[in-house]
Image 1 (spheres, rainbow, N blue to C red):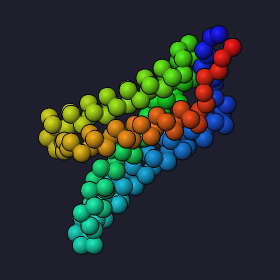
Image 2 (image 1 turned 90 degrees about the vertical axis):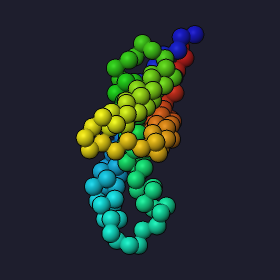
Image 3 (image 1 turned 30 degrees about the vertical axis):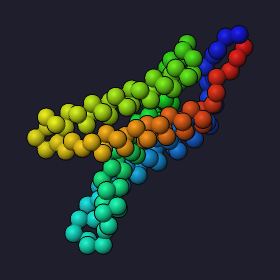
Image 4 (image 1 turned 180 degrees about the vertical axis):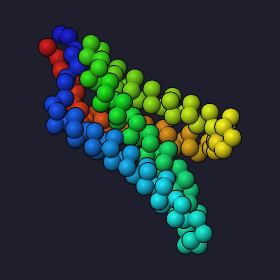
Length: 141
């Protein structure tokens, strides 16, 4: 029995893109550009809301990037079993986002934060599991 990568239908790929890549990406921009700046000086925020607003872009960006890479990788790498493609996409997203956070140590206006690194992990895991589930399982022939 051969393990083959199941090619998702165009509808499944579109649903996966919208749910796992596009929506978290749009939420990322909303939190980063609208919600967080609106908290500054408002006086009504709590420490928890401020903290979550601070790490939310990393979490949402990780979900979005992992889902997007997974969708593209499934189409590009058809000779590799689906599980390996999915794990590779998650690893690429995680390492890339961690590298970006690390580079901020050397940027003039960078803001390195260990909490950002930590919140990237659950974002990658959610992107990994959601995209893998929506896109489908490997088939045997």
